[in-house]
Length: 135
Picture (cartoon, rainbow, N blue to C red):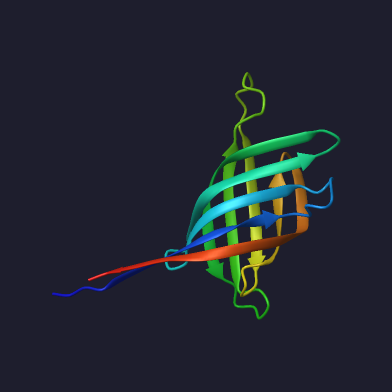
């Protein structure tokens, strides 16, 4: 019995935020997107500058769905917890972001971190298809 299985995984890497604006949060992401399973996982690095630069990084997971809108083709939601910057603090910091992407996987998004909401952040990204098939 022949069974064809095609697994489509997309490596999605990019930046959300205004790099040229020193007050804008900048999120660098490296994600594996599985559109047929509607799942996303990977790592992110968040830099926030409020007079003093703070850098957080960690693992994230989430979901992806087709949007059904003309300009926005795909929606991605990811969330995770960042360890505190100060090792003596046992408090983990929850993080969540939503992305609205066009057919080129660029778009805009928003995030929530440390009680603040950031909206309308531009997303510039690249994708690489990691396809495999077995018989």
